[in-house]
Image (tube, rainbow, N blue to C red; front, top):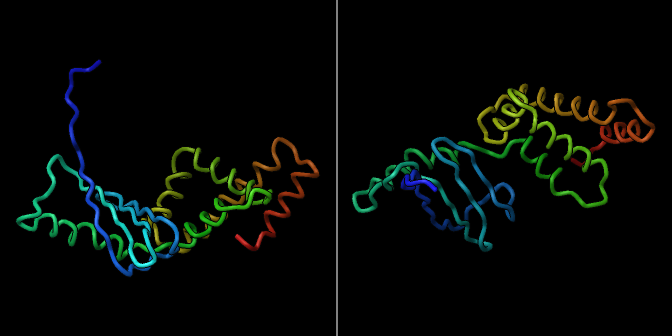
Length: 176
């Protein structure tokens, strides 16, 4: 048991937006922005709820417009500047798979395994998901690295007819 008092280091601020178009209309969206993450999710056909974590022990004042100023200067530029990129859209399609799609299950497992790698492997993937790296060439290299990793994972410790077949299917998957 600790005698240390818990400290509040952030506050959650939420609001409703009307007629806000999200990249994927029926899904929630998390933007890993600095200084805080932002969550959007639809609650009806015309309303979207938005939550943002406001760092600090004290919430900026609503009465003197400090909170409004913070939202306009620190938060609003992030949702406006960050767009869903190709990697995030692909990952969504891989993770929302029917239970009978063996190839996508293998791709999903490879991505989970890739996330478990340390260092630049996972951080590069997270940077794309967070919208922090907009470089198309880097995205192409990342797809290549994940593909090579997936193929290696399927073929090691030694290739089998089943693993070779799965690799061929993985290479020819067009509906991701």
